[in-house]
Length: 151
Length: 151
Length: 151
Length: 151
Image 1 (tube, each protein chain N blue to C red):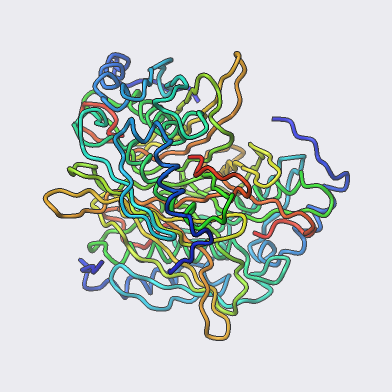
Image 2: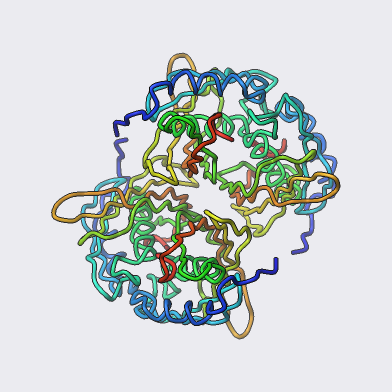
């Protein structure tokens, strides 16, 4: 699905909002590709975000997935609008054992009040991608609240 | 529901597994009450785990909820067994604007292959609790893998 | 949680809306207890709603659960308002092998735009209840649409 | 994703299992396309499966979605194996107001113990498709139980 942003300033807003989230910096998350209705966020494997086997913690996978979907929705908000995560479901498909974990969020159903996003998370090792997790998320449109997803 | 642990060493195992998770230390999560089939995990509000309004990031709420449910399941595993998160759903009920965010996980359906846990997350400010999030989680029993939830 | 209905006519509206749903009649669903924020719906086991082992079909369990949660939310709507199911998650805990399958829906988080409901489904055989399924549901409030949950 | 069936008899098994489900006949569900890892099920709009606006009842949409995903998983089971629905999440994207409602299930992650399926439901009117619902489902593999999905 091809989406049209309704705010010409959409990309700058996403980057600024992401930069304000202390939690994203704490886990070393990086904002990768941003496009209307599509946002990618990545983390690199390391002890600070590990679980007991040294893989990336499932909770960290959930954090970047939730943010990737939230910013995908945010990219389509009109000026002065933002989004709030209502709920999401996460299926963990395989261990996050790659060097890089990449969450690709995209809007599957835009709406005036609610937006549905899907996030495919892949684990990348030696240039090869493996499906790692699948999230489906419901976002609420917040008219007149301009400062990014409230994830 | 009252649960019987099948490993007399259950409490020590949970505390040791939790201590091995770098990601839990990174977000400042603390293991609170542990009982058979019930585990509580808390974080304190602060910039390192904040979103752009200064509340606790939704992804961090998800991390402690997932871990609280996972350890609730782990508390009932036989010696040499552990659990793996298969999937979860998270409904965010209100902003995580308290001083402490506390996730209370409990097993609602034990099973030989799968365990279902429910996690109620509350936001605590000035001693008053407010419902913050609700998670329902499916865990898979891993016989013969002794080192804690692979969240 | 104790709820106050905002429409004195709430009970009559629920019974009238339920009676208009052809699909509920087709599966033989009956509206049982109704209270503010709480609604119960039941079906009796039988070939017309069976799966291949003769138990009640999981899809029928889902139908009565979705409706029980939807009507629980509807019971609290102001005059002229109704609810729409946004999404739900269903965990199937045990086979629906009872004589009666009963879905107990209740509102866990009321709200102006969204309502969260939880539904516990039990399977009843010889007077004994067994947990059968657990649903968590997000409903959207439709102001000015008076005719019941649009499940 | 391309899937290889592990039972040469897979198609006949699916058709026979579907035919045994009384609940599918009751709602007028028809088994459409079947392929390894992919199954489609449809219903036609009508009063017997309607909600109060005359659209197809959301619970009926859920029933065919659950079955389409379940049979998609079943198509890949080895001889003597079947699948059991563990849980699913359903996002309702738009009213089921078409003449035909079609659920397209496909396996997104095969596994020895668990299988994850995704189901896209479309509403078809005058030959045009509109996204109606999105389901993500976890199925459990039942070795040695040969009679179809226990949905």
